[in-house]
Length: 86
Image (cartoon, rainbow, N blue to C red):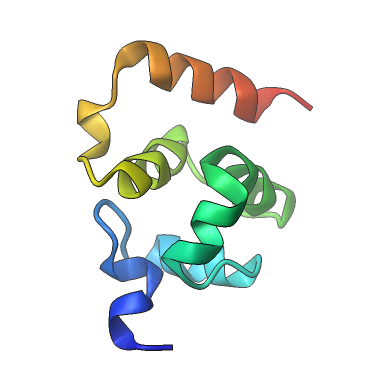
């Protein structure tokens, strides 16, 4: 994997996010794109980590290449609902 492919190189995501995502098998942007932010967030939670919803928003922002605080509030609400649905 090239250094530029690392999760921590994506907007909004740093070393802790990368560690959690790597632990659940998400190592690159392509991996994150494949499963999506909601499934990735659920996997992190199911793996025993305790992320805030900011991780969910950060991943979605990374996929859209925007800062997570610039995500539309309706989108953030939808993501939150989907992530909390069992």
